[in-house]
Image: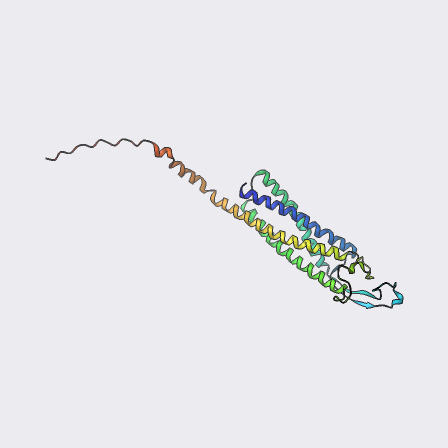
Length: 245
């Protein structure tokens, strides 16, 4: 198997994984946005307020309720969703191109390979930024709902505790933590795709440089072929004896 074919197979695999990972970002973020009625939980601020126990249901922890002062910026959730959607669409398109190139036994042009490297590096930094934003936003929201870890519940456990908000918080940690892990996996895949795209660019550049030299090398090899070296040399003229007087 040639080098370019191995690179194409590796790139196809990376694109297929990016489609699956991108869906694992988009679907949980969409479910969380629907449960929160379009609001973003990331970087939301709030506090716990003590209520009259007679007005509550009498269950443990019902003497307090969470009050959200300000919901997080929608762009924080939309940015992660955008990276996931772009990864799905780009991975599907590039995966189809890789399969087409494998079938046709050829690769991108030098300019197209350069654009692929440039795009992969740019989206790698974008997905890395989205991963950091989602991680920090989830930590901020967990600090809010756990009252800075003062409550006897972890962030994963408190999603089963009534928060008395006008949104559905029964699965927020599962959705956001799944989207967070998937987005970090997407970032690592973009790093792999950047490396593979650079290797394909280097291979295309090597083929481009060595291509024009092949006809000249072939001509030189034909000029110095063994048949030419083994052919009999023309007879030399007979030497005329010289008589010294």
